[in-house]
Length: 121
Image 1 (tube, rainbow, N blue to C red):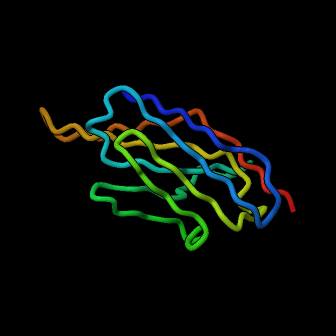
Image 2: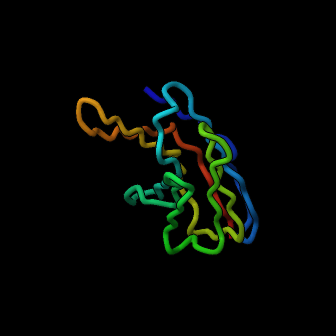
Image 3: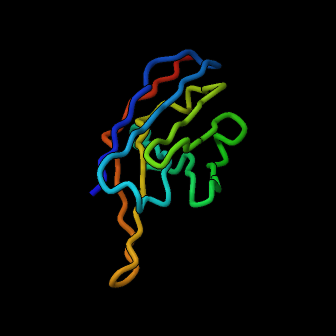
């Protein structure tokens, strides 16, 4: 099992910055992907940014050039959010994927409890 705890959400004015952090505990050594998703009120949860094996990153189009995801060590992932817009308002969820290869390949996905980010006009 993997437990994820986020921190760093809050209220910020448009154009401002916030930094989210997530710390994983438990069976962290088989985690191959960590990152962030978000869910705005009345909408489905969507990808924000993830870091895969080898440090490869994937960003959603709306955040490219404004957000930076980093995984400084095996159990921590950060999201630096700059030039925030009201449309970025959402609950942000930390995400981790752990892959097991025995007796067969199985991907297990884990989620944090979420942290609210609110961007005012």
